[in-house]
Length: 269
Length: 319
Image (cartoon, rainbow over all chains, first blue to last red; front, top):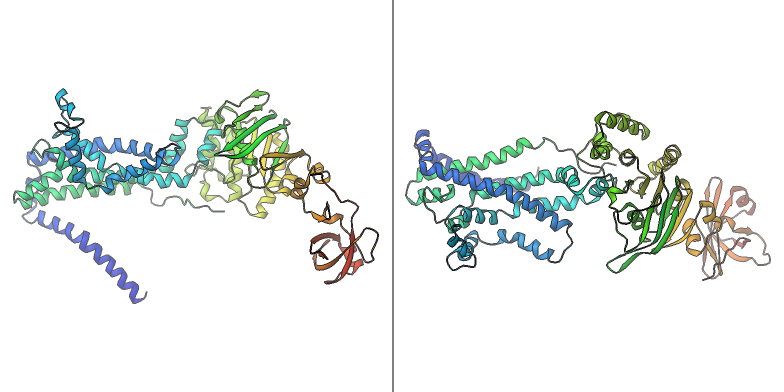
């Protein structure tokens, strides 16, 4: 190995370490600085537990919905032949381009008093500063991940396998279940991981629509921020560790599900 | 088993006409080739018959029933694609069993039928492999077994050997012919390779620019082509003035004769029994002559030599 390649590798690893490993390690260190007991106590207060529950609840609603919607959107984008497909394609990327805070504020304007959809509140359906609003905001910011993972795979597999299934007597649903879905399942799984990670970690959009009411509409990231602002840094770090553990658990679960060596997909003639 | 009738089928794609009112009759139990250059509409015609493409007008009849409005899955066709369309996440066994599984046949029946078919296509030992672990030829035989599993009334092959190398292609052609003799299902094979069409098919339909130019046996097409396109597509051809002539019908002489043309020998290629002589005429037109070894030796052909050529089998077509 030449010196320049060694240097390049060192620089890349160093960059990664400074950006990712050191801060995360530091969070872990600070969380357990005062002992495991203190950290455990900090994350098991009723407020912290409620925040954790709320975060998991939102993820449990948003992830399945966005997975189904994401697959349908990907199919429409790749296989559909309709006017406005280009527009739809651009719109799907919008949540990635927009700052989450702006998304949240847009929701506040839309559903708030005097907003176009503000009438819901008068009919007893509270959206803003309540669970529905937080779910909507989280769903919006985490929408693109499944779509963006599935689209290239759908493009790559083409339609021949589906047509073969059709000539063999399979209906559309059978074709999807037996041919299309198995072909895209790892892309879907990866999209689900990214969606989950985003849903769990979302701060900006949720912060704008939730009202941040402790024990009511405070998700775990909001709770971390509140603790931090309240100078309870150890508590904030302890809750951060919980968030980090959740993220790691999602990734590890996927790794465990994924076969060690995917059967080679390239054409061997 | 059943014959196929195509009546006045037309198909356009965004202003491009792939098929102009095509009619064709395919006899029951036959093997028919749709032969033509790329873009001639042969694959589109096959996909219309399969039900994967809806014609803009016209009818498709399979076994006397009008299936024009039926979806592909209801037509009872078996289709084989150029790039195999193997179900990559399924084993060879599951690929072949697919159509039967969809039809909810009893498991023991499926197992019997699949093993029967794997034997037929000579893949007995490979049932548990995945398509990625097979060679191209093996994958295509698996695709054929999969198509045959549902006992289709017609078998449709879309450039089935197009993605394979020349040696495997030749082997599979001979194998397909034997298979057809065994199974006798009405078969259509799409190909752009005239040699392949002539070798496997009893009837050939030559397509060009969305129209059928001629339908006939390989011999009829070769000996009595209906027009210049068919003549030049089903075999090598030389232009001789207003007429066309096959290279093996070009006769070479040392001395001028009545009606003979002069040409210069540009290259002599010895291919064992056959000798190919490349000629150039005074007006710059190039010609190819095929001689036997003996004929060539008698003429003592050399590069740069002037010879006299004639042919009694020149063909002219009215335009």
